[in-house]
Image 1 (cartoon, helix red, strand yellow):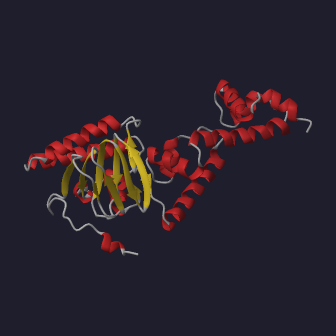
Image 2 (cartoon, one colour):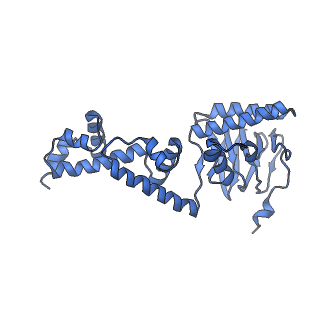
Image 3 (cartoon, one colour):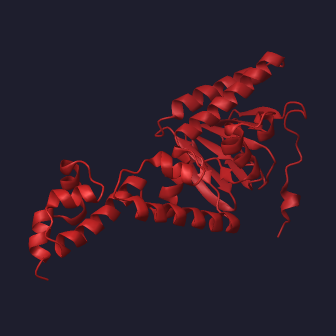
Amino acid sequence: MLEKEQLKEQRKHGTPFFPYASYVWSGTSKSSSFIHWHEETEIVYLESGTFTFHCDMKEYQQEAPAFLLINSEQLHRIDLREGQKESAFVFHLGMLSFQSYDETEAELIEPLIKGKMEFPMVVTREEKSFEIIKELYDKCLEEAQKTTLSSQLKIKGYLLQLLAELYENQLFVIKDNEENQEEALLLIKKVLNYIIEHYKRKIKIQELADLVNMNPQYFCRFFKKKTGKTFTTYLNEYRLERIKKELLGTEKKMIDIASENGFENIGYFMKQFKLYTGVTPLTYRKQNKSK
């Protein structure tokens, strides 16, 4: 088996002062690169055709139009056939790092550089941000034909906008490793314990995000990834399980039970209860009271 260092691409992308370069494949012949990796991030636009590509030793098929996003040091290969069209640019994430350490650096740029967060493998035209990403991508390719300082500034600006678009649409992927998994387990336990302690009142996503030092969007993705449910669904179901017990174990009025367990709107409670159990609270009480 080849050692990973042997698979490192030797071609230099851009210059040490501006580590960015773009490439275009016109589809006039057949080509296949060897499996390789490089330190730069690569964004590939598949313009026409059906492509076979490999990432981390797995083979995939992708219909154009679509973007492939290849992370730093990720093993990859793209097979190109006649008639297919694609283009790409590569850039070192370090060129987007800020000298002044701020929130964007801490929560996005640094995790991407350190490999704790990754780009999505594919962005298709079904994704609502596709057209905006395509527009920014095209602008990067256009400015890459120039060699002025202003063109370099524009490219950096477009790349940052591209990152913002991916982030806003929650397309980045949290990378798991043993250390991250252990840390994530502690964080999710902290959140679930907080829900148990405070489910009877309104819980805002912001306060849970603050609890584990995340921003709200990142927290929502993290929670869904670790529990398989959105925060709202998980909270509603926890409350409903508590309510089911009280419906059978007490003679309290249904409206009181609902309000004491975090449901401020009785209509919303009725709807959620029926979705969860298949029956109304009153029917549930009658059917199960004698069991």
